[in-house]
Amino acid sequence: MKNVSMFLLVSTLLAFRPTLAPRKLVADKTKSTVTYSMVHPMHKWDGISRDVNAAMLYDEATKQIQNVAVAIRVATFDSQNQNRDSHMIEVLDGLKYPNVTFSSQDVKSNPDGTLTANGKLTFHNVTKPVTVTVTRRDVGGQMVMEGKFDLKMTDYGVERPSLLGLATEDQFRLAFSLAFK
Image (cartoon, rainbow, N blue to C red):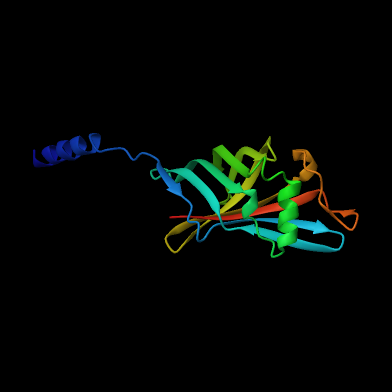
């Protein structure tokens, strides 16, 4: 009888336990970056933004990401060359279209441990579907999401920047490292 009473008590407590709702996690700006890499016939360079706004809904029970959103202001990228950065803002119409955004409500775990985020990237006021492979690592109490993908400027209506009459390659790479507490 005692075992039946204990079973009923535990069953009752479990039935009324609160379910874990997905938590909103915000990226740690001190540890998150988005980098673009471009190639010109005369040189290569990277521009890094350390002013990344990112958030996700994370389901504690399933350890799954439900959705993610990222926004970066074009003017925050630093290539270690002020003239080049100003020219990039001009080429990208950074005053008219100040943000690059990505959002996904379709994040899936892969057998190899990576994640696939199917979402939409808005760049230069053009929105296109993008699929991103993401590597997740747990580092010092933070969940770090890293990945990279290639884009073509002309797909987003951007005229390729040029120097000395030579244009950059159309394709460039975006890489990210987002740290969530």
